[in-house]
Amino acid sequence: MKNFLLLPLKYLLGLLGILLISCAPILFTPGQLFDFRLFFLTCWQVLKELMNPAAWQLNYRVPGTFDTIDVSFFDYFTGPYLYSMPILIASLLLALLLSYILAVMAMLSKGHAKPLFLQTTKVLESFPDFSYIFLIQIAVVQFYAVTGLLVLNFYSLGDALV
Image 1 (cartoon, helix red, strand yellow):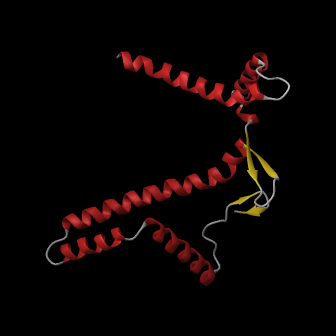
Image 2: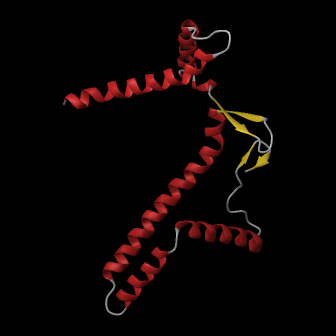
């Protein structure tokens, strides 16, 4: 019970440590060496910014240059995140359903079909995951080439496709 009560305190102290370490570089600015008033003012400003999620920004560096692209955190979550999450959830549910069906088929199979089925699953397990991802990408591109139907949209950040 004592550890259960100390857990939130340890979490808050960890967050406080991260905040203090994040603001520590302001202590070493030239001309204002070890200005603790500025340090605590910076900590307070960071806390205020953290409490305002609408002001959060993600910065992407343009490859090959020193230019950055600023993207609002909310824009990030309303764009690619909302596009990706239904795909992720659907793929997890499909994987769960297929694994359940295949497990039931493996349990109910009899005779010569059972060793064949188990050997097939061993062969499929031996392939690395990235090869399945590569094969799915090839299948999607081939499907598009044959039918002209785009199954998945490409992800883009601003005007550049990623």
